[in-house]
Length: 187
Image 1 (cartoon, rainbow, N blue to C red):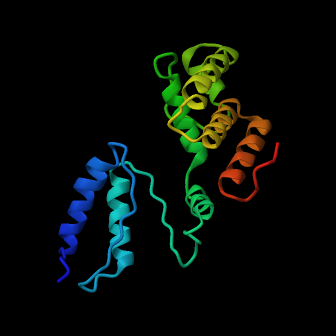
Image 2: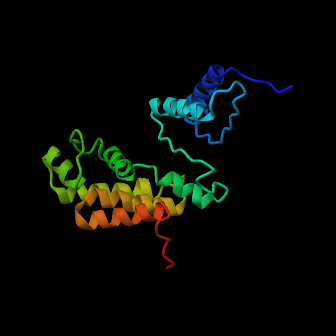
Image 3: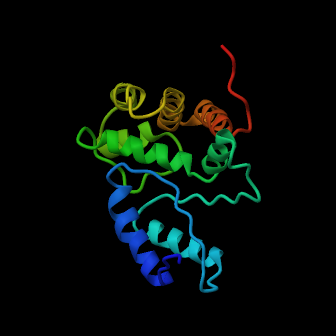
């Protein structure tokens, strides 16, 4: 006999044990659910995603019908295409700037160095120099991230920091690579 849980009980287990403890502690896994009571699996997925989003997690939705999830690069690109990369880079830059500068609230589009300099009564070149050093130390050298991803995030942060047409071009190129729109260059 197969053990079953009521849908509400199962969602509570996922929220408490998986989202509330296992993932924040550094765990990662794939959970599969089969509905035995007739609850559509799309409804379950939406409820889990809603719970995760309300707890501050980023959520990506993949379907084996649309993505060849057995190919890790295709799964990665599908997840990456759903991520708010510019916003994530801005959040990382804000975290790097905390304690050193006054942050504008909220950060707007464009060059973050100028926004922070204006809010701090500082010089944009100085802000750029300090944050570029922190990007190198805390993003590029973060050994918990894969090397290619560290490089991509370093360039995304630098592009978002500097803004302008060059920054936008760099950001677009990195995002195209992350989402599989452009293959990585062979150097």
